[in-house]
Amino acid sequence: MIPQMLKFRSLLILTFLFFATTAYTGAQERAKRMAPGSSIKDLVPESPNEKEDGITQITFGQLFKQGTAEYTRVGATGLKDAPPLPTGYVLFKDLAFRVKTEAIIAGFQLTVFSVPSAENETDFGKLSVLHLEDDEMSPANRSWSEVTVLPRGWNEQMHFVSKAQYEALQPNFKLRQLAAVTYEFGIFAIASAPQSAPERAEPFPEVTLKAMSSPEPVQAGEEVTHTITLTNNGTGAAAEVNIKEVLRKLDYVSATPNQGVCKQKGAANVIVCHLGVLPGGASATITVVSRSRQEWFPEDTTIIVNSISVVFKQRATDLVDARGRIQMQRVTSTIVNKH
Image (cartoon, helix red, strand yellow):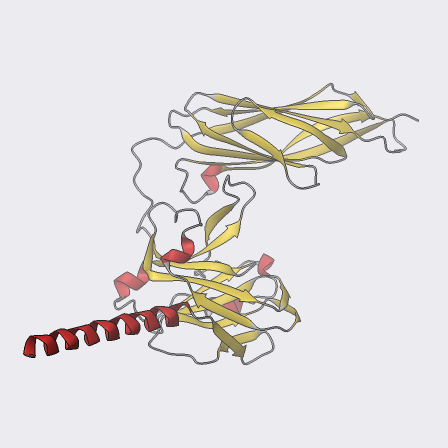
């Protein structure tokens, strides 16, 4: 009789633990609404909990129409379809959040996080806020950006976020507070960042760009070819090379790379190519064919300036820094107008 009672009690305890765990997981996943705060642009949680990791405030940059806003703690499982976190970053205590709003907004937004689970200043000092963003220059069409509000990080492009507002939200261990500045909401991750750049045995790739237009000049209404050559002059390979050309007054016909893939973005005359790995000493070539438009210009010739941008990485999971960018290089085409 006693063994049966013990077995029954054990079963009850296991059942209780199962439902308790299920209830806890459900609470973590339940969306938390935000209520209007001190101004029409500010939102705070409806039921803030100072002992719980979460979002304590959202400030809209510019508000055109009010609407509900909420956030959900999605954890690592909510990132299963996202690209891996950047090299050296590790998700901190499963802190990943999805933020969404029905409000119509523009400009840069501020999202404030409370992280009381960072128990010591050393751990807190390693924390960064990462944001998952649409990225046409990434083969995955999305990439992580480091968006933490940091000292001297404000600039005039932030428009509706004042410098004083920004600086007041710098990392604060006493308050266990971190903040992010982003153009959109979506997925955020609190990650422990590397203390310094990860050591690399191989040298950083040295990618250069050369572009030419032919024929030069070209008759209006005829095809023009841009030949774009990317060369890695270094000894270390670039794990990922991506390039974008924006055509002006030229209509896209085709883009052919000798490696990787190229595609037109929507209906716009924007071409993006993902070339993959470019070893040290190697080159890749893209041939972009377009047609010059038959538009009326008073001049006999018109010079069209098209822009090319390049992003490359030493490792596919690296954050892109200044060394891995070639921004807005130009290739010109001279159009001979028909009168």
